[in-house]
Image (cartoon, rainbow, N blue to C red; front, side, top):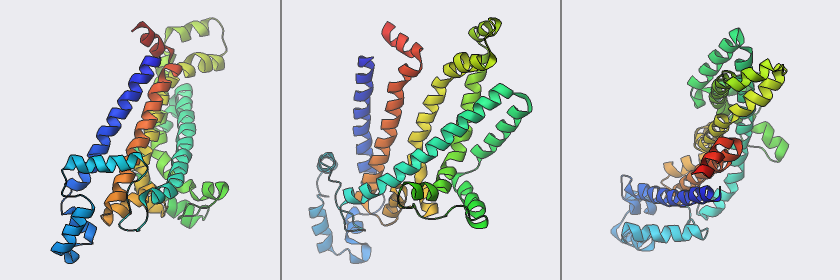
Length: 316
């Protein structure tokens, strides 16, 4: 168990280091002269200004030297200074992180609770209920996030006036209220995936011999479902939920922009549009880090959820 955790952690560090180099290199591999963007555009890019900017940002150094300077600053919490906001990138990002985390966690609660419930209902009831659940979840999964966001805004926000359509609110209750529509927009497609994975995993467990033995022994059906079916069906569900939560950070780019939320996603869009390289690099790196941390946590928890993985690791 300890060896597996160490192996996963080392893999995380190596992958994160490689990802940070890709994030750094991709920015400078983009079309155009980085120095011209840093000056403020081609019109202002006199030879003197370009030379001064290249010297200030060490753009004449080899790429690996530039990367070493940047990653060294990142490890000390220094992401540089924003070109658009003229403020420390770390301060800009830290003010946006809580809103994005709240949105992701809110959405995760929605798609896990509703998705698992629909999957269990579909597998247990079968027949017409199963067909309806499968049809609805398939439809939800096929609609793009921004289309669902527009539909929710038009119906629940504008027509019925139940929820605000912009902003993130202040305080826990107000934030929960303001972020309901954005969280729903993120969660609807994902709960469809969780529902289908839960349904399929439970159907596979229903076909196992130990379930037939439990029924033959006279165990009540709800106990059979809870003890022998749902418990053994959780491993793939938890894995899928972890992967979805990790991917939600990328989904916030569209949703935060659509709802006018000041989070990391909308900050990334603004940074890209204004060629604010330091902010773009910082947000992309943090999103990659969030994805890797969540997926690594799922890997570490997998043996606790599925004893077979723990036994295989012990045998190896």
